[in-house]
Length: 99
Image (cartoon, rainbow, N blue to C red; front, top):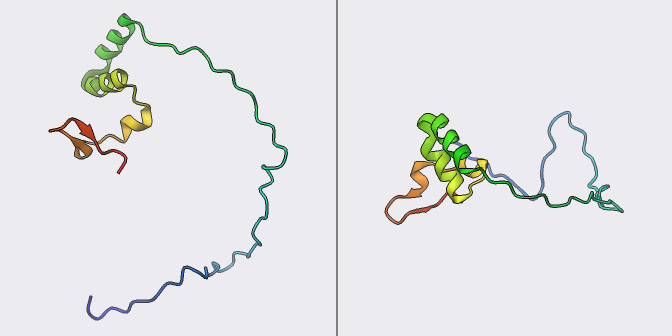
């Protein structure tokens, strides 16, 4: 790029934002000492009955292929939302959604 001035950024020494006080780093997380986590018992896994899944497919309209895919392969909602056509290998049948 001709005629532009580039500046070098030193990542080793962060500069504080104007007006933001500098706080010292925390030695130990306040949540790490003697924190007792709640016990969660695993619940029973519930599946859709055949007629329930059929009703869901019918109600899905144009989204039916996505709903069927999610239910048949066990995708979580976030995985379904992140699945885009350009990330699917249509020839080999795989997905690159993690890249």
